[in-house]
Length: 92
Image: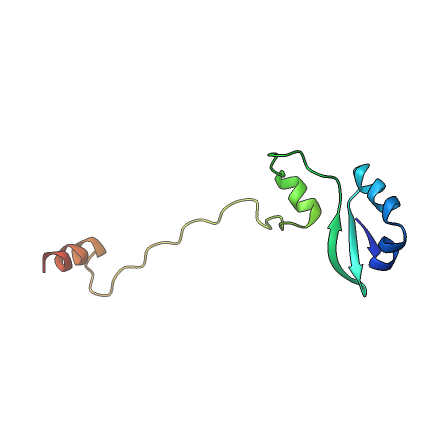
C-alpha cells in the first residue's frame, strides 16, 4: 500500500481521489506517521472478508494453524474429585 504525505494529498487531492476510486488504497501520513487511509467505498452492507482485513492490516493472521490440545487435569491433593467437593459445598 502506497504512502502519501498530507501535503501531497492537499496539492493533488483530485488525482488521489481518482486513484482511490479506481480501487487503490493509500495511506496518508503526517510527518511520516500513518494517520489515515483512503480507498474505494465498499458496497453497503458488505462485510470485509478475513483476507481483506489481513491485507489492509485490520487483523493479524494467526501464527498457529491448529488448536493446542487441552491440558490434562491435575489431581486434587486430597484425592477427592472436584464433583464430590462441589456436591458437599452445595449441601451446606
